[in-house]
Image 1 (cartoon, rainbow, N blue to C red):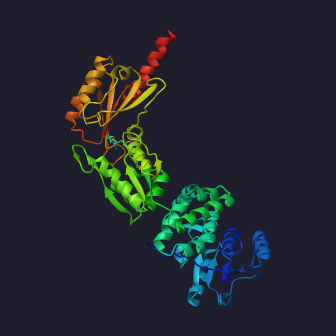
Image 2: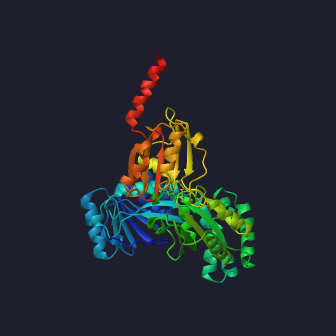
Image 3: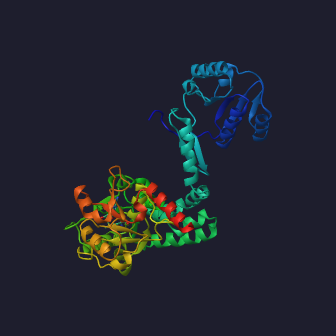
Length: 469
Ligand SMILES: C[S@@+](CC[C@H](N)C(=O)[O-])C[C@H]1O[C@@H](n2cnc3c(N)ncnc32)[C@H](O)[C@@H]1O
């Protein structure tokens, strides 16, 4: 960190602004928004600046800067748009012990002004320490789109209830949990959508229940996506930062767990095949007990929790135990890996159907599958957990009429830095897996869409020509 970030209170503070052009006008606006008592000194004020100063009651002195202007000032902002003048005023300010910023001249400044995103009292300041202002502007754009327009109203709403919450919930931990819960409640969404009346009613109900100790924990069953942390949903990210306890699988990477609140407790319940670390019953019990103790539990699963993730079983169990459950979808391995490997799952010319299937049956054996249906051409198969049963799958598909030449792709560690994509044909699938020593997690794709794109295009062109003839 090159500079120390602070938010300075300027309410009623005397500030000198030297300059009269566009840059000075922009700074005047910010200073007035912060309620500073502004004196502007410039020999040639532009009309816009003069008008702004007049309407806001700022003092405008129409002459060149002189050192006595610095007297009793808390800050000086210099924007004369003339390097020699900027330098002279900055030196005078430093000699007088007044903190100075010269617009667009970080070398002459004691402090720099960040790019900002504002939503009422919520202010996000972004700095690159002067290294890349363009990047700061891009980051500001990203944050602008990420923050809801009415976020300032939400901050005001919370502020109006702070006293009441403090009197009802005496400990800081109780209050933190209450506010976390409020932020994911209907009341918070109502504030953001402008319905403050309904929000107040719901808020009072929530507060009363909390005061009576009626608020219990809950479980969010959250999909973490295939591995790349950037493929997390915003909701998953938010819940990770709110969770008291995170119960996670083997497929959830450290990079994703690092996004969680620092003091969240992590419980690993990974199920390495044939060495079950925790049985499903034990996992269900952990979830029930943690939520029963009043915690927000994030049950974090690789991919999507409802795609070969037992999310449905866990949700049923929790609901039967009377525990509130929220499901947050994630990008499943099939869509994540296909995108990362660069082929589509459907294509108007090559596949009009896609099936996600498990290579393993309930007790680890072969899955109970209608191979005749899956053997149709132009049908993409995405086989999860399919390494061990690939030989049978290949044999059954070919026996039911799928061409041995059908292209296949194996994506190992899809979307992660160590991703591998191995291509071949259906007839060779088991040998390919063996020769390349493919290890879990890997997804097997079978279908024309996985073939070489140039060959695919050429094939389509030939077929169109044949049809035309
Ligand atoms: C128990 S299933 C969980 C699937 C997960 N719920 C989903 O929606 O992706 C585990 C299997 O998903 C596939 N898988 C998960 N993450 C993967 C990745 N990053 N790359 C390749 N395959 C992956 C593998 O076939 C792995 O054996």
